[in-house]
Image (cartoon, rainbow, N blue to C red; front, side, top):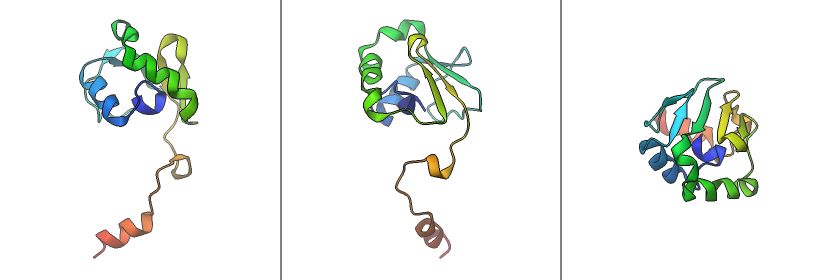
Length: 106
């Protein structure tokens, strides 16, 4: 979600930024990259971390990537809202579910 909100240039960078305590979820520090968000959760960059060049560069690149419909971003506040869980149609990963089912059904 950090990557999708535009706070990082890659998923690996997003994981590292989370591990280094640069983000808050609903006002509380979160340092676990696999933290599961609930609908309505607010993800924000800590005030001290808003000056990081990595985060600012990623925010500048966001218009090229685009924001997904299940996320809402407030660039001025360095915060985003998890509006809803994405449906399969909203996911842009090239996954063929049938192949996964066939592999694990053997």
